[in-house]
Image (cartoon, rainbow, N blue to C red; front, side):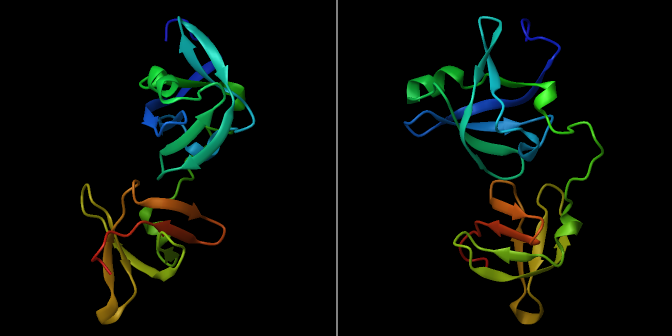
Length: 174
């Protein structure tokens, strides 16, 4: 980031294009997707200079990724041109990214309601198994209890207020 000002923070990287309408998959680094101020532009460097792009749409994909549509990125070719580039934001537009760590842990999900991809209630999260590299959630109790992998690519949304998590559940696990 030779031309980037110290007033900017690299918050993410464009991982790849998504579809033919210019949408891109972005992986977040220093901040969580919810800490981004969606009313402020993000910046992508071209020839060493940060160029502003406003966010037209923003859909979280797991805990550290999001599908984004940026103004001016209208085609697959436009999206391919920015693939691999860092996404910058003015430090002033990041909401308390340096304040303490209050992120959710697997333990925090015990007692929450699990929903499937269609929004149907699967059951209550009753426990977790911290298998290295493959944490799992226990859903239900007794003979109907299921153990499901907890991976960011499977999470559709997390609603902390309602204490609900929606996930794509691999076929055959319930």
